[in-house]
Amino acid sequence: MSSLMQSLGRIMQSEAGLSSAMQQLLAMATDLLDTGYCAAWIQDNASGHFICRARQHAEAERCPVIEAADFPELTHLLSLANGTLQLDQADNARLTSEWSAICADLATPMLLVVPLTAHGNRIGAALFARAEGCDWDSAEQQLASQLCGLMQQKIVEDDFQKLQRELNQHVMHRTYELRLQTEELRQAQQLVQKLSEIGREITSSLDHNTIMSVVYQHLHSLIGAEVFAIGIYHADKQLIEFPGNILRGEAMRAYFRDVNDPDLLASYCVRERKEIFINNIFEEYPAYIGAAGLERLTDKKSYAEGQPLFVPASHIYVPLILKGKISGVIAIQSTQTHAFQPIHLDMAKTLSAYTAIAIDNADTYQQLAQAQKILVSQDKLAALGSLVAGVAHELNTPIGNSMLTASTLQEETQRFQVQLESSHLKRSDLQHFTQGLSEACELLMRNLHNASELVTSFKQVSADQTSQQRRQFHLAQTAQEVARTLQNSILKQGHHLTLEIPKDIVLDSYPGPLGQILTNLINNAMLHGFSGRSAGQMTICARMLSLSQVELLFTDDGAGIPAADLRRIFDPFFTTKLGQGGSGLGLSIVHNLVTTIMGGSIEVSSTPGHGTRFCLRLPLQAPTPVPSR
Image 1 (cartoon, rainbow, N blue to C red):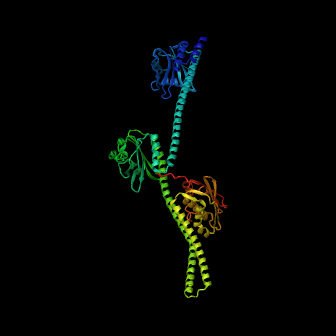
Image 2 (cartoon, rainbow, N blue to C red; image 1 turned 90 degrees about the vertical axis):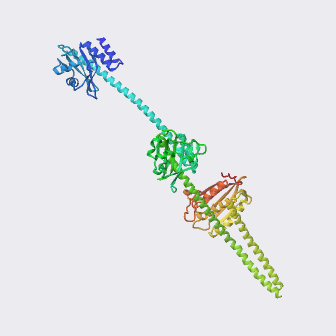
Image 3 (cartoon, one colour; image 1 turned 120 degrees about the vertical axis):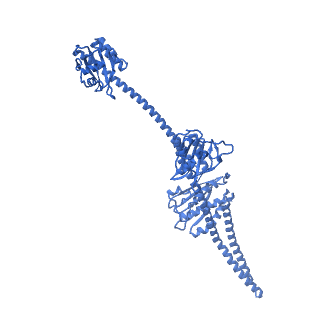
């Protein structure tokens, strides 16, 4: 008995497969139960057939599968037995005939059927057969049931091991998939980040040539295209302009494409507003162009001298569209077939969106710069007109006084001449005439001197502002000349300007731009700071900060600037008086002149209701301008 238990233990602990363990158990059953035939039949879930997984019989290969249609009784016997079942002499002829196909040398056996279950479900049965007349006693039936129980345990263990292996394989497969997905996500994230950085670089450019250079540089590194081009669509001319394609790093000549030409890929892309993705132009061209277009894939006029002819096979074309408006096309080409992948098309579409924004920004900037130039010119003309009117008004007083004095002197001279000719001239008359003549000359000299100073100031200010000539000048004198030209306008509005500038501050700089700066600050204070009020006080004072720098302060006691507007005060076209005399360029011009022409800095501080303060820090010697290329 102990040897039997040891044998059973070795079988159950063996790492051999299920079929081998069942075969060993059946072999033990054959010895212990003295059977002529024994087998374990397992039902296949998919087909419903019973398949022999292990057997002990001389004809081992006979009938390994029992199909319900061919073995109805045996199928019924194997599937419906709910407990250990003993059949004597096969019970009926049909079972006997079916049994002969299983085991011919036991024509009418004594059968013992033991059901096999796993996980609470019937999965098959074990068949034990003896010669006719040998019944199965209860001990034998119990032993058969115990051996089948061991089979069931091995079946459950095998199922568990299969499930464990499948689970491990699934985990490994899923882990591998997750690693691939993680790597793809990482690469996609890096690509998105790189495209975002490229987009920022592209959209920061405001020049068409720079935009094309940046886009080509990055597309070439990402895709490796042999030819790259950006076409600019001119809707008014129905033309696509290619200002300079890049062929293997070398620039090509500019050329044009007719947008209505049916045999050009670029024209199709712009006309249909659709991207083009071609792996082999010679096979895929009918979807886009006619056969004539194969001879026009590249424009021979675009080649520089010595450049070899390029015949592209792979193509990517993406339209440049922004807010429903098409502005051009990006073209990428290669001589190799299947040179591009769908991800390259996605990259091109992403960069085309950035490029469309950049081109729109560049066009808008050019229009804005042109409009700004016109408005600045108009602003200068308006300032000059105001300056002329002010000077004319200022000249009217001394010249009028001079005219009145001259006419009075003329009358006195005529009266003196009459007295002299009539010989009635008295000594007192001569003294009266000479005294009046002296007073008239003094008055004439004073008024004409004032007029001369005004004219000189006007000439100097207008010449400086026109030529922007660099020279040495006294800061106090230049400020006084500007104040004198604006004095009429200041007094007319009831305001007052005070100058507190030491006379010994000398600059080697640009008096014209400085005069324009002071003029714009004064006009800005009168227009905005003193709006709706009179008796405004403005002060211009200066002091030396170092041996090379002077600080110039302009202050007013006006309405001040709200905090929300203070950070935008130097932006072009920003004004709170739109349509009321404000162009929004005055302080923008001031900032530009201070920081570029004069090489200084400007800061503004203000508290609403308590005036505004502009602080200019200017070098005594302006920087040398960089010559334009």
